[in-house]
Image 1: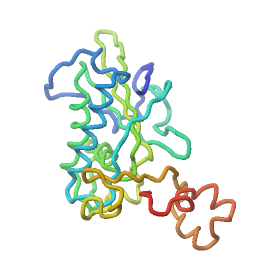
Image 2: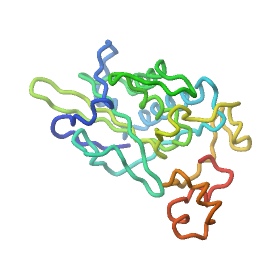
Image 3: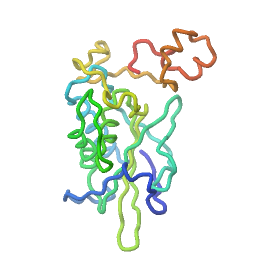
Image 4: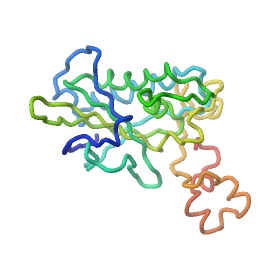
Length: 241
């Protein structure tokens, strides 16, 4: 569960991170979308995992997503950053704005439909109004914790609805966005920790340096800086990281 406050006008920095629902999709009562409901949490996790196990080409290191609960969040349409932190990791964020409430399944599928602009392994130059970051975050292999929330945003003449999901570990590393997962046989990287084509052995830690493997080889994990900023490389051996 992610508790949101919707405040102020939408920041222009989210121009490429928020969708306005245009194509007609079914109306759903707002009170059935609240993420403190176990059925809603299950829907969100199930839809994500269904999409993750069905990627083309198939993924050898795709982690199974699980939900986490937070007591509250100040992240909102007026926030200044899309970075959220949990212990030992950073989290990414997907956002969606609608003019009326729609199901979480439809919101997630709208994000995923950006896949039509994505081709695995290729760097694609996209126009400003075409984005794939929502899709690549959904299928980012090492993201395994998810928490979502919805908030009504009253406007002068109507109410809009802001949907947010946070993903930990954070995805969309610019250096890897063309390959958000390892292509290969499902669970090829986790043969002993596999559930229905998804890996179940996440590394609980996060590398804050992009060159942690080099740092580890050069200085070893006894180095204070390597210990502090390369925890995944030092503490996770067989886990997916």
